[in-house]
Image (spheres, rainbow, N blue to C red):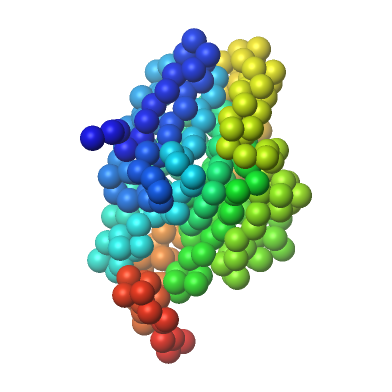
Amino acid sequence: MPDLVAVETLYDGQVRRLTLNAPKANVLDAEMMSALQAALDACRNEAGLKMIQITGAGNHFSFGASVAEHTKENAPAMLSQFHALFYTMAELAIPTAALVSGQCLGGGLEVALMCNFIFVDKSARLGQPEIILGVFAPPASLLLPLKLGQARADDLLLTGRSITGEDAKAFGLAAEVYEDREALLAGVDEWTRKHVLPKSASSLRFAVKAARMQFYEGLREKLGALERMYVSDLMETADANEGIQAFLEKRKPEWVNT
C-alpha cells in the first residue's frame, strides 16, 4: 500500500515535497492528517532544508477534511488533530509552498493558506464550502482576512463559492498561475532555483518568523477560541448537525435556523 503522504527530497536535501497520496480526493481524514503530521515532524532537525512543498497526487490538491469526521461526536478530535498541523508549520518556520491543481477545498485550502506561497494551474478551483454544510472553517476564518482582506474573505467564507486559479492570482492569493500541472511543476522548479536555493536555510527561517510574527501570533492566540466556538457552540445547534448529516445522506438540508 503506498504511503498516504509521499515524501520526496529534492535539490540535494534543500527541498522536501509532501504529496497527499489518496487520489482522487486526497481527503484530509485522520489517517492522512497523521501522515502529514509525521512528514512535517520529520523536517524539524533538517538544518539545510529551505522549503517544504505540499501538493496532491492525481488531478486534485484535496477535497478537504472528512465530512464524516465533522459530526458532533468526532469534531473535537478532528479539529484538534487538524489544527496541530498549523501549529507545527508555524513552529517550523520553514518556507512553504502549495502546488495546486484541481479542487482545493475546505481543509485543503486551509493547508494551502498556511503556506507562504500558493502556485496554481488553470484547473485549480479554490473554496471554503463549509457554510453550505452549516458549519464554518476555523483556520480560514483567521487566515483569509489576513491574506485577502476582509471583503474578499467574507465573500468566500459566507457564500461557500469557489474561485478559479486566475481569480486567485488576481486576488493576490496565488503567486503565479500556470497552464497545466506539467507547467506548474516546471514553473515552480524554476522559481525555486531562482528565489530559494541561493538563500541561507537558517536566515530563511528567521525571515519567516519576522515576516509572519503577527500572522503566527494571531493563529496561536485565536485558533483555540474558534475551535471552542465550533465544538461548544456551533455543534450544539440543530442546523450544524443537520447540514453534516444531510451531506452524508446525499440530500438537501432542512434548516430550522437554530
